[in-house]
Image 1: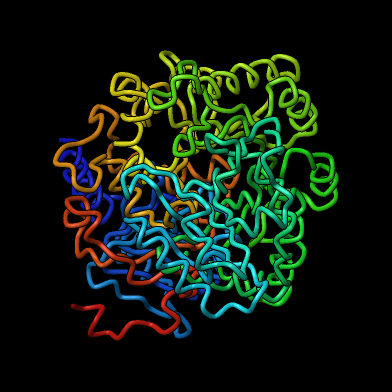
Image 2: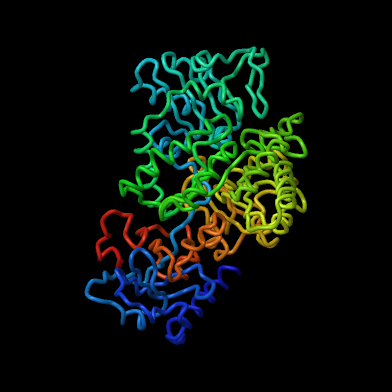
Amino acid sequence: MGTKLLILSASATLLFSVLLLPPSDTAWWPLRQSHEPDLLVWNGTIYTSDSSLPFAEAMTVRGGRILGVGNYSSLKDFVGSGTRELNLYGKVVLPGFIDSHVHFIYGGLQMSRVDLSETTSVDGFVAKVKDAVKDKREGDWLLGGGWNNDLWGGDLPVASWIDEVTRQNPVWLSRKDGHMGLANSLALRIAGITNRSEDPVGGTVVKNNGGDPTGLLIDAAMKFLLPFIPEVSLHERREAFRRASGYALKKGVTTVIDVGRFFPGASVDSIWEDLSDVYQWADSSEEMLIRVCLFFPMQTWSRLANLVRERGRSISQWIHLGGVKAFADGSLGSNSALFYQPYVDEPHNYGLQVVDFGTLLNMTLPSDKSGLQVAIHAIGDKANDGVLEMFNTVGNQNGMRDRRFRIEHAQHLAAGSAARFGQLRVIASVQPEHLLDDAASAEKKIGIDRSHKGSYLFQSLLSSGAQLAFGSDWPFGDINPLGGITAATKRIPPGWKHAWIPSERVSLENALKAYTISAAYASFLEGDLGSLSPGKLADFVVLSARSWEEFAEAVSSSSILATYVGGLQAFPQQPPPSEQAQS
């Protein structure tokens, strides 16, 4: 019903905007243009994500920003001899997607490492590792991951699976969620991890019944091993940035919120190194193709506060300083998300509190007082409640202001917690495609009743008045906004015939907003990004869909034909042939 209503609304709004709106509507019509536009986009359906005029048929751009949006008949009068024209031939245009949660450089690095994301058996896991180690010199580390033990029945991997084929090479392979990883026995020896190794606060060294390490390290326990992995070179990081940028643009993503190579056990300095060595280098070298908004480890809040005072929130149109991030718990897949009740498959395990709430409060108070935006990772219901209560305390102590607290993931909520997001004006930064993997595992790990009442409550969060910001958590999920929109509106996991918790499906309009204007708002970027409105940066994507009706009926069947950043085509590098545009 929601899709049909949206289609009717879209058609009616487009007809009204094209045929009936008078050209005196100065909010949209460029009556005072003193220069001809660089670009005219016309003859299509342009979804603006701006409630004052949701749909238009034409748009003009100059100097990387939007001049006007509305009817072709009025905009064409401003076209000059130097204006390029982009005839859409009826295609649909959307604002450039904003991915609200990625590990951008890390994702680019993982693209060149062993990929276990498609592995569905133990034999396949071992074969992948054996094949990947062939080209390694003795002593070289084999890195990669993306494995999901649920795909082969649930058994967690152990070092003995791969020791025989990796005798001369230390190995570290992260799980799909990034909160657990597998080391082979050689890597364990190098890191000094033995049967005497004790669990750190917020982490677990998994051991077998005999007390020996299995090779699995969970959350904070990864800090025992990660320092022994050789530093990634400057060249590798810059190449990773180029790969990641190309991949994101191919998916229609024009802005990413990069939470860094920072996860439990990782170095807190890596995002700072990426800022100076990669992002600022690319900006000064005019190699930036995608906009980034960076979040830094909360431990470094004073350093960021000083930088914001010196440079402001925006270093350039390409690089924005978002805020600080911390962790409250782990993940569902690694049985380390923090819950009030234990895991069904581990009755004595309630999950892990990666950083205790007292410590989080002591870091959040000065971070917030300095004017920084705060984002905290929370997945389990107890972790989410703890963070919500802490945010309430910080707001009361530091006073009223537009702070836009964020909870990253917000996957499993207790009764009444969704309403608190709205009451406290906390942004839910969520990843729709994660629910496709978690539907079956959540029912197994926390039970059908608990999961159906509290998992991925997108519509409940919206109904509470909370803002949703959609993202991917790439490389722990795929950068794929069209897939994320489908997941949020359909909620049908692969192989399922029915929706998982259908009452929590959201409308197409709300899903689009969560990838555009709401995502921009979630990072204080709505003044420049998130909608195709006059004065904003001209970031947009051209879809293969030939009408709004076609797109709305089958989002997943659409593809990205072209991605524009600042009015210039960034993907593909060469314009598609006119014959393709008309097909």
